[in-house]
Structure formats: C-alpha cells, structure tokens
Image (cartoon, rainbow, N blue to C red; front, side, top):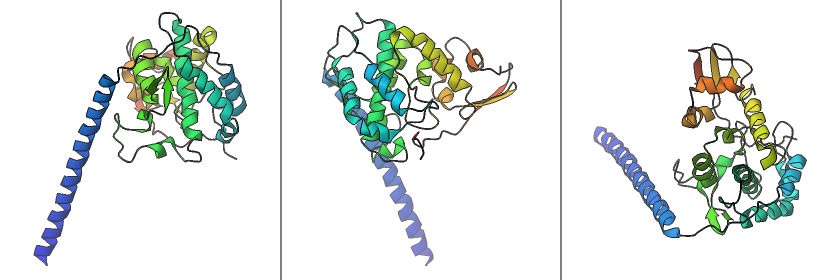
Amino acid sequence: MIVESRDCGNTLVLKRSVMKKIEFYLAIFLIGITVVACSASGIERETSDNPPSHEIWDMLTKKHVRANGMVDYKGFLNDKAKLQQYLDLLSNNAPDKTKWSREEQLAYWINAYNAFTIKLIIDNYPLESIQDLHPTFKIPGVNTVWHKKFFKIGGEEASLDQIEHDILRKEFEEPRIHFAINCASFSCPPLRNEAFVADKLEKQLEEMAIQFINDNQRNQISANEAEVSKIFSWFTKDFTKKGSLREYLNKYSKVKLKEGADIDYMDYDWSLNDVKP
C-alpha cells in the first residue's frame, strides 16, 4: 500500500510537471507567433485627411450610459446598427499623424477603444464579466481578450491592447487616458456619457481625472493613507514621470496626502458595469 501511495504521488507530481512544461512551451509558441505576425504583416494603415464625426457616439452614450457611468448594454443591443455605423466610420477614417492635431488623434483613439469595447460586450451579451471572454489558453500580457483582433482600423487588423499600449500610452504619454478608457468593468473609471472631442478634450480629461480619483468606491484617500485603484499600480510609470504617485494623486484629490502617507491598492472588481434592473 505504501508503494502504491508513493507511486500515485509521483504520478501526480509528474503530471503537474508535464502540464507546467506544456504551458511554458505554449507561451513561448504564442509569443513567437505574435512576433512573427507583427513583423511579417507589413500592412500600412490607410489614413484619412480629416477626422470623422463623433456625433453618433455622442448620441449613443448620452442615451445608454448613466450619469454614474453604468452602461445599458441591452439599449446598445437595440441600437446595434447605429453603433456599427459609427464603428465603420472609425475603421474607414484612421488618423493621419501629419494632418490631424494631437487632440483630434487622442479623442479618436479614446472613443475607438470605448466603442469597440461596447461592441465586444454586446456581441457576447449576456455575460458576467469581460474576463469571461478570455481564450481557453489565457496568457497574461500575451493572449487575453484584449489581444483579440476583432476589428480593423484603416484596413489593418487591430485589438484593444494595441490601442491602449501601442498607441495611447506609447505615442501620447498622457496618463489621464487611464481615466477615459473603459474596460467594461465596475472598477474601471466610469464610461463618459458623451464623446471625447478635440476642442473640449483638455476639459474632459481633467474632469475624468478629478471624478475618478475622488470616487470613494474606487479610491479611498485620507491625509495619512490611501487605498487606491490598481490602475495606479499597473501603470505606475505613467503616473510618476514628473514626480511621485502621491504628488500625482494630490493634483486631483480633494483630500491631500501628507508626505510619507501609506498607499495601498484595492481589489479590482471585474464584474460587468451593466445597468441593474
């Protein structure tokens, strides 16, 4: 009996070891595919001389996004054709960096991220969380729902991850984008119920930063300590290029953190930001 018990234990250890090796090599394989695909695509994005109108998105968000940022996904489903009309506008009118202003480009990419996220959700609605849409073999940072290429921009296949990390974070170095893009989850900064537009962009980004940082459901700040969103942990480098995280929070927080105050991070609630009946 003792021998059999040891054999079973060794078998379990062996199985776990084999599974870990499979997962490791699968990760390497997927990374390799991603690198090859990126380098071999060679597709040059078609651009437009003029930015598209964001009026349709403005109308849809005013209609289906509550003041608190919760989203009526059933309402978006009823307006699916109108949403697709806007998404087609985005797809067929990619930014031209030489002809569009910085504000026009930034507003475009923020709206694109939010609008295509809505499409992703309503195409799979109902669901409990955007994380339900991860692939079977999810590998953080490599193969997740955000890496899924389910739309095109200027004829080039694109993903939400590309918009966020390769374009918004890399090209603009604007930390307030983290308060403007919405990942369809409760702990995300609330979805704004209007479109971002170039001529109001600075005001809109400032309002989103103030709103989010002073939202007690997502950040709890007192003079001596703070428990803030994990967004500030995940993207610390974005917020600390010109000073400490405490200094950045104090730019927008009504309650100012004292020097040396403890900063910790809240658990992230990935439940869908759906309007409840």
